[in-house]
Length: 548
Image (tube, rainbow, N blue to C red):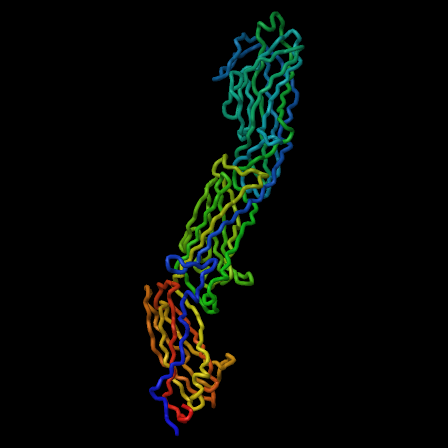
């Protein structure tokens, strides 16, 4: 009542699901299907204020002129002729030289963020334009003298002072000097005139050890005159004139409003791009990706009129916050003043100063950390300033990361299984020592695959006592739409331990992919792999007819 079955008889025992990449690779926050292909894509915005730089107050701006006395002497000169300056129509009888000079010293500590200074913009302590008045007080003149003339006198300011006047017939500017032609009306031998000007700042001042230093002088040069008609028959020989210049400010203290030069403000600008929703097979240990291209677009709005140099760092971090593979990408960008500048960065961009852009994803990190490590303001003209004390300089950065899943070098892993084999083979498993598996793999993924099989028991534990091939090669599909490559292989499972085949309940398939023979791989969601499986008993099995 027995019959031998087996030989060429095949028993279909199942197939894996159709393992589509759309199942292996699900869309998420950063992974999208664009134009039928997978693309890691993330766009976002970073907006942070640049830390305000402490304002600077200057207390010792105004020089202290001393009262001095000069002698009148009989006139030996004529009135100077200066273009634009109106001279009085007088006949000079006496003149006195009023030359004087006073030191003009400023020593003020600058904020540590200021590294180099081209120019300094100043205001009064209220933040308004600094209006300055040079006053000249005359005294000690005879009571009979009604007036004297300050004609062609020169007020020489330091060349580094940026100032302006309202020119008229009494005041003319030439370079860093103001020429004066004023009539000084006298009452009881005293008189007064003033020269108004507005000081805007200093150009090319000296900066040493973090201090703004100005060491110069303000000088008053020229003559005062008395005319014959005014003195009549009187004689000014042995007569003196007392002169008291003063530089009066609109406020006792002045404020440095802005600096043109090199300024490195404090910044704390960073963001993270989570990659946690990328497919697990891309994160398997041993998976190695050499991305064909990674495009990073950065658009930076510069809130300052001066150009800025910005240093960025992009760090791939694992779940413990450690840098993956030691690869930190550094970028150096220069952003035009007061404008939005867009940078398109690829693997060969000269903006990359260190690190490899495509290697950021050679091992998929848990996140990408994008950080602005330095913002350096570098004025190219004196007008390009950064205001001190201003806290709303807002640096606005748009970023866009695009990584098509196209690889020069790629290794991936995926696992699947066929279950319930124990019930399928229950009638024969106790009667055989050798089982052949006919495997047909339909592959639509353009990767060369290696298929390995692991026998498991009902508890999912590996079975000892069975021998299987370590792995079989599966041909890659052509890298084109709807292309499928079928591969047929035979796997021999032999029992080397008694009753080991009776424990067989599950076959776990591990698929390892590599594009070592094809360096132009694009992954698309419609690509798939299917494993069809049937069993054959090459040596047959003695079956009781009552059991069939």
